[in-house]
Amino acid sequence: MESSIDVIVIGGGPAGENAAGRVVAQGLSAIVVESELLGGECSYWACMPSKALIRPGTARRAAQAVAGAAEAVTGRLDVGAVLARRDRFAANWDDAGQVEWAEGAGIRVVRGKARLTGERTVVVEDEAGAATWTARHAVVIASGSVPVVPPIDGLDSTRYWGTREATSAREVPARLAVIGGGVAGTELAQAFGRLGSHVTLLARSTLLSGLPEPAVALVAEALEAEGVDVRTFTSPRRVRRGGDRDVVRIELDDGGIIEAEELLVSTGRRPAVTELGLDSVGFDASTGLSVGADGVVDGVDGQWLYAVSDAAGNAPLTHQGKYEARIVADVIVARAAGHDPEPAGWSRFAATASQRAVPQVVFTDPEIAQIGLTPDQAAERGIRTREVTHDMAVAGAALHADRYRGWAGLVVDEDARVIVGATFAGPDVSEMLHAATIAVVGEVPLERLWHAVPAYPTISEVWLRLLEEYGL
Image (cartoon, rainbow, N blue to C red):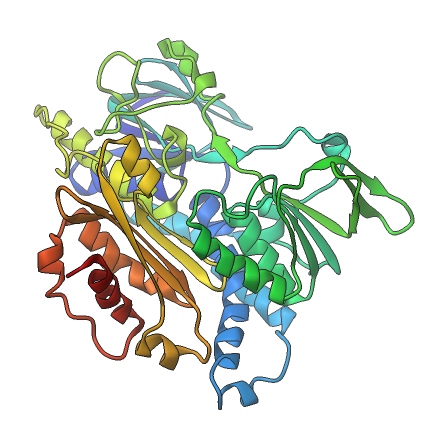
């Protein structure tokens, strides 16, 4: 069987759905090829279930941080209720609702594994056989990423959790060992600690590497105060599971030994592109993909192959992948109409924010919210910067929670006098992030930002303090 369609999207996660939905809304036809659940990692094993596991503990802790409310919150988390709520947010791992949405939007859902066999040609294989599809205009790779498995002796023969198994767990283990001090490992360590596990977290280097040290220190202190055993600059040497209690035994490089009922390995992810048949179009996928501002894959002839989000080697964040998908969709529609859009910075045909203004949140308690460039990243781009910082010592924070502790920092382009980066750390700071995103993307001059008056009393008062610290 062979069919043709305007656009073929490989991968039915949020990025793929957005790319397909947007081209269809503008008059083209599209299929989404998905081998698992439509909706992807975020809907069933990452963003939604993980935040559903995290939120109850954070809500309980927020109440305990306010006198009067604290006296009313005396019990432990109801683990069964937490897991049941998690199940609802993961749609009970049933994608019927997502399929209904896609079909209602005019997108055809094709089940199976996709593989390029030539220019604009994709073979989709399932249990029934194989079908060949030809794209009249474009193929979009939105295949996401897969976990990186570290080379630890014995791990390949040991039963362990990846993040999928952790976010879909049916029980809370008495002891949980976590290998990996990145965002997912840290979030899940705290979530399971609050659900009743005794958690040991092993980080090869620092906790949450790459984020500002004062912000990370607040998270580390919170984890340790809650009983999470955080061990930085520690690596496992050998892993074994067995014995009468079927426990995991982890031997560390410093000679220490940890035992746990479950082991979570969360050591990063890599683009899922090596099995997509890219060699058929003269591309070696082993080194990963790179894309231009318009999403076109570098090194492939013609303007027909696009990639977004994790698959393109960009920030593995759902919101950023959806943004890139919207840009790519508009580029494809314009080219299909015979136009040649120029992917100039900040135009609707260039994913400029993916290079300069990526917002992200670490949903620990306290949270860390960040947008844009760090001082080191700015220096690499030749930007002369100054960093200003301030504790969250404002009236709004004091009212928000007793003994509120937080930290904020801005990275200012000294020549343009605009903000190119911002970080906030503290309870509930994720809701402050979009204001910073607008300031960075809008390149709002500091002199104009001085007139953006933060409401009193809110945590956003820290904006005024930061600008005063800068000298305004």
